[in-house]
Length: 226
Image (tube, rainbow, N blue to C red):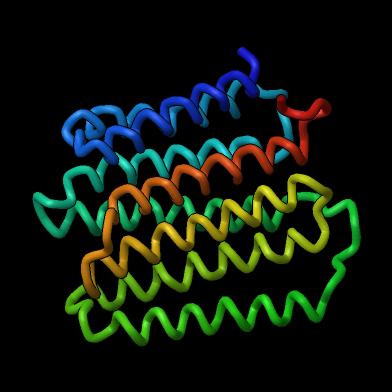
C-alpha cells in the first residue's frame, strides 16, 4: 500500500466526518471518529523504514487512545483526564521526535527563534491567566498539559529553522494547528462555549496530525508523496 494513497483516504474520511458534524449528524460521526487516525498510522507503517518511525507511530497510537477516551468525556471527569494524559504522552513523543530529527542545514534565523519563543511564552501565560479561575481541581493537569504543548511547538519551531522545504512548513503548520485545536477545546470547556466548537476542534486537530505525518515522511522518503 502506498502512503500517498492512504493519506488521500484519510483526507476523504476526515472530510466526511467533518461534513457529518456540519449537518448535525454527530451520532453518526461518533462511530466514524475512531477510524480516522488508524489511516495515518497505516500510511506511516507501510512507508519505507526510516529513523524515528517508531516514535511517529507511538505518537499516533497515543493520540488515537486520547480520541477514543475523550468520546466518553461526558460520562465523567476521569475520562477527560485519561484523554488528557494520552495526548500529553503523544505530545511528549512528538517533542522527542522533533528533537531527534536530523537537521541537514545549520540552525538559522536565531533572532526569529527568540521572537518565536517569546510568542509561545506569551501565549502560554495569557491562556493560563485566562483559564486558571475556571479550572478548579484540574488546575495542575491543565497547566502541565499547556506547558507540554508549548514546548512541543517550540521544538517544531527550532526544527523549522534547519529542516528542508517543504517538510519544515508542514511540520510547523501541524504543530500550530495542534496547539490551536487544544486551545479551542480548553476555551470551550472551561471559559465559555465556542460556536461550532466540535467542528473547529476536529478540523484543526485532523489537519495537525495530517501535516505532521506528511512533514515527517517528507523528511525521509526518497520520493515526494503525491
